[in-house]
Image (cartoon, rainbow, N blue to C red; front, side):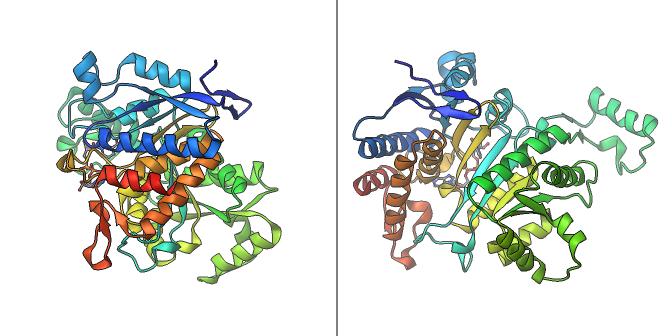
Length: 420
Ligand code: NAI
């Protein structure tokens, strides 16, 4: 029986029995992966009366891979992820300032997973540092393959750094390198193709899910030809290819003079009356402030790699922390996707039963939805909503004042399964 998902004309064909590869990950990875698999198996069993089934296949990456094969990211792992198209992973350790390259970045680049998708929502019962966390409901499309994450960096004093410096000073006439003798250098490639495919994915998502707006977040006032170009290419794309379903803030500005705060509301009303999605833009620093002051005005967000990194974690913190925020890395054109826990390996709590498995479990719900097993996804989400509302949480979300009930990682999984 065929067990891999096929991808034809942009659509998945998912057989009833599928193989899903998983990477446990380092640190708390094995604890949360065990719980996630149990929860997912249970939800599928209950949703489809045994007609559908996941056969899990472990793939090696990170420390476990190194111990068993001598490589942190064995070739087999890449080949099998390509074969099965869809996979799920726990966190992988990345040493800072040297050592192995980030395995996460390597996986994203090798499969060209150009979208990092991070849906952010609030679950009642979870303590949050903001007054109205329920107003935060955004989906971030972070570009995943370009920007400073391309890894083009040269360390101070190396022949490469000196060559780059001399090229810029002598051949390009650059005079603004403040300390040329003691600078390291990094390059920030942002392409039209890369920006367009990311923005397209965000717009399609907004249209398919009936969402009111897509906001392009950029620092184009300073980085005019990279981040500023991202915004321009985005607006050009929408006006050329999506004019029946969307309109841009740039067009709106031409149609009518507007001023002040009411503009967002007026644009929303116009979009609603015409059944269209608004495409607007905000500068990154202003956006971070906006997310705290007016989160309701933002829905889908499309941004470049580094901005997306900061924004994702800030929004996650607003709804209760990275322990509860899911994510996926997706190539919509070729159908590859790796769903993942968005937090790290949490080295200080390994083996203590303190790890919150929610991020990985919610990533698994995104995976089930992605392959068309919506019912199983929904039943996990409803159970999780109930459990968290009852105040049953792991130690990261435990708050004596809120009379929450503390559960270990595995107890949390068992309670969740009881509710499925
Ligand atoms: P971290 O996310 O591991 O930890 C930050 C804080 O959050 C710590 O206090 C930790 O205990 C807590 N925390 C994280 N996940 C939790 C969970 N599920 N339940 C309860 N508490 C949780 O970030 P840190 O310390 O910066 O990184 C540690 C390692 O993880 C590094 O090697 C880093 O490179 C790697 N990392 C990997 C990621 C990935 O694989 N996607 C993402 C972020 C970091």
